[in-house]
Image (cartoon, rainbow, N blue to C red; front, side, top):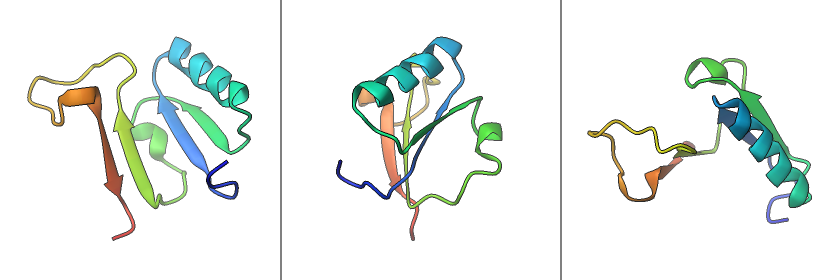
Length: 80
């Protein structure tokens, strides 16, 4: 594991996606992935401040004016 002391919080609104995230974490032998069922930003309440944020869509539910379009994801350094 790249960051064994790190923590990953996965916010997922879709119940099927929640279970898929949990199955993937188990399949990869990770014990630091915490799946939170809910919709951002409300589901972020009470979570620790992040060092980095990855934003992606499991169902590609992006608004046409959203960026980036390619890959439906973005990573943001939240430490600055």
